[in-house]
Image 1 (tube, rainbow, N blue to C red):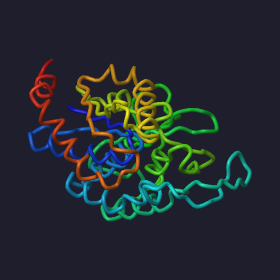
Image 2 (tube, rainbow, N blue to C red; image 1 turned 120 degrees about the horizontal axis):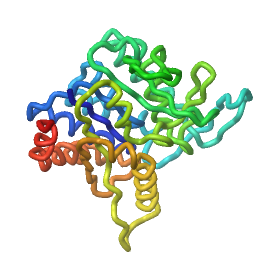
Image 3 (cartoon, rainbow, N blue to C red; image 1 turned 30 degrees about the horizontal axis):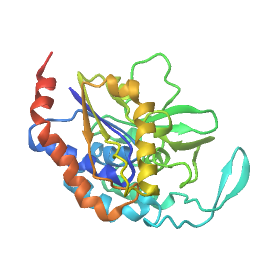
Length: 285
């Protein structure tokens, strides 16, 4: 059995759809999928039976909702209940449009909650900002001692919204007393959670931190910082994977919607360039 753990990475997450298509085109079946943030957006659609091609088109269709409005980072003020009080947070998006879009796609497949998904085991990470703990939204609670962190009854849309509520851009996602933020805070590449689902091999997919040059701007510096932080946070998880596929997206910013097509191709190309190594790892005992 093969598991796939997909990292967060903003709009670059569409590269994960390219990765999936390349794997399937070359006869590599995925038995379990997990994701954080944009990795969760791709992973849950695949778990519900959507093809990489459909995921690619859906991601493009809902890209404005996914990034919060547009690439200029102009956000409206919204209110959010945090720590029991009503707090006015100016400049943040609620993420409700993303939640509604994903709930609609889930209902097309006959699903409402993550726990109802039947096509494929899926794990989605998030962090409760109240207690600083990681939680996993899944349709397959593993056989472990402590199962308190696993949640199955959350709606599909709310789960991906929670996992991708990036601090500083989105408000926390409220659910049953939790205030969820982006899963990348604690685990940007959920290798271990995918492995707990009983797979033999785990392929991890993350993004290369772009080099800084004399022409680099503030967004380039911010992206490199996020990539370094995300990879460092997940260092232990990444090192425990059986194969790490690092996708280079040529300085694609967190919200560069105009580069969606290129990122899909980057993901596909990364698999093709490493296909021999991937197959060798998967075939080894």
